Image (tube, rainbow, N blue to C red; front, side, top):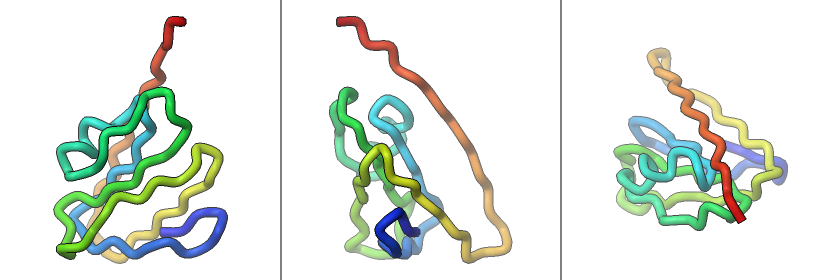
Length: 88
């Protein structure tokens, strides 16, 4: 995985969740990710069933471009997108 700064990390896991504060944070939390404020401008990346005891979530800025590369011939991509409406 890399972002605008370059290489970040290689996840060895059954899957990866890329979440916005109002998107898939429930899925990320179930996978051991942190709770983040819905008003925060960030992207949260959490591994699912990591094959590493020290796997941690990674938080990057909302403006960052994140690139993921697969290392297996069999994979599934699922995209779930939500936009929160905040009332002030």
